[in-house]
Amino acid sequence: MTEPESTRSLPQVMEVMSRFLIAEATLGETLQAIVELALTAVDQADGVGLTMLEGRKKPVTVFASNAGLSVTVDQAQYDDGVGPCLESYRSRSIICVGDPAAVADQWPGYARAAADTGVGSTLSVPLVAGDQVYGALNLYATTNSAFSEDDIETAQDFTSQAAVVLANASAYWDARDLASGLGEAMKSRAVIEQAKGKLMATGRYTPEQAFEVLVTASQRSNVRLRDIADRMVNGTSTFTELAGPLEGGQN
Image (cartoon, rainbow, N blue to C red):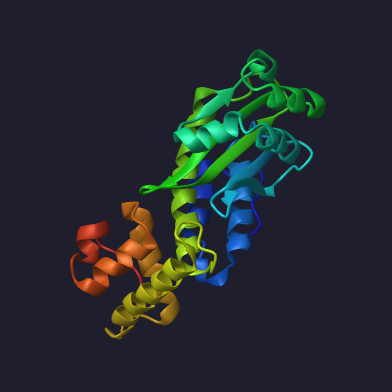
């Protein structure tokens, strides 16, 4: 994957995200790419952290672009069990704080850590795909009231697609599957391979092209890759019904 550039616009960032091939990256590389691209998508962000639940219980920052800002403030919230990133995750809502000191009574650990590290604003956006919440993307700025309504909308648009990429990566590669455990992960990969096989049997696609078609259908319809593959394998839906006409493959 090409390294993100700070001058990229949101459409450019989204194009990079749409071309990201899960089959060519580990889950860790995918998480890192999401964090790096988020930092380029929202100009006002000085740091980005990605909060997920380890073993579906313990929140952790799996990747951060500026550990001095994000990890310290994230950890204070994990220690207290409350804070904007955890609230965003739990409530599936966007939480924007323009001045951490103003919420010291509600989230004291978060406010203290923000003051200690020079964080003046935070924006937390849940990563939701289908009925699953995969984590929260946390953006940090060193000035108060840094994030505008446009920034919030940009972050929301970015996380909508990033959540689908994360869901696909979880289903395809990770034996610790973030949603349903090892058994579900293996089932997901099996049905994806079956769907790839059906596409390849037409003679129009290589294995890589077949997988890219599945990913494109998932992103266009905002349906998890596993579900797209399952519908194709079981003949309950066509790709045209799910995501409109698709390009790719060899004629």
